[in-house]
Amino acid sequence: MTRGAEGYISSDLIAPPSKLSPSQGHVVEFLSRASASDGRRVDGLDTTKKRRRASEQISAKRPLISVFGSSRAQCGDPLYRQGFQLGMLLGQAGFDVATGGYRGVMEATSRGARAAGAQVLGVTLSSFNEEVNPFVMRELRARNMYSRMKRLIDSSDGYVALRGGMGTLAEVTFVWQMLALSLMPAKPFVLLGKEWRAVLDCWVEYLTVVESDYDCLKVVEKPEDAVSYLKEWFSAHPLIAEAT
Image (cartoon, rainbow, N blue to C red; front, side, top):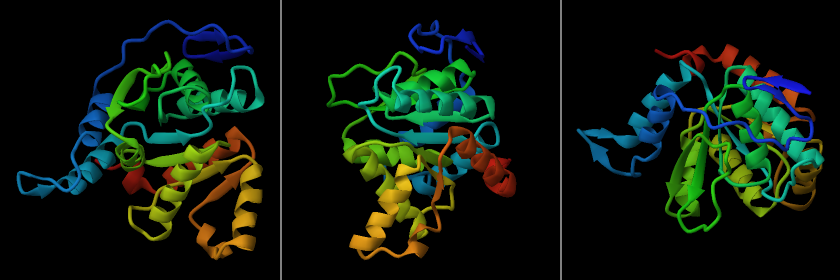
């Protein structure tokens, strides 16, 4: 049994928690900055700068971490449990969580984070018929895959990727490129699971990737290692984690 903000959570992760009333501040700011249209100018100030300022303000409260991972993970399997544990530890460490809002790792992480008292945000797709998972406290619907990915990336202060499929790989490579090319401010990016090391090694062997391209990535094997790294990173970067 694991103790969370809503009491004891069964190890089989079956019983959903009761609905919570989300607080306003953090979530409202997230929705505001995430819904800004790219390239527009408002009151003479580019919205990219506005989103950056909003991100710094929101980080002063609780940094927001986007979590990527497979939609195929089933309740009770090792990957689902890993996602749940990550969400729980993130919430307990003072982080809020954003995911793609659907099943699998997205549900597991949302479930764990919500049980630990974190704000849980889901960025879903208007074109999908699938319902948002019941552990998301606020849903933001994107028009297409591009805007969905952009909102998850631009609006977050850090990232964790678990094992996944083509969607997870797209998210990982996009964030990786943005960070490696300094196309956005430096942010922590954790790849959770030893399998990621095999993937990175494969790219070096068969593509035109070199080891130094991975300088912006951190590979860890356990959820507690991922959260520990995030805590250390934000402690060392007070301008992002504690801006006023």
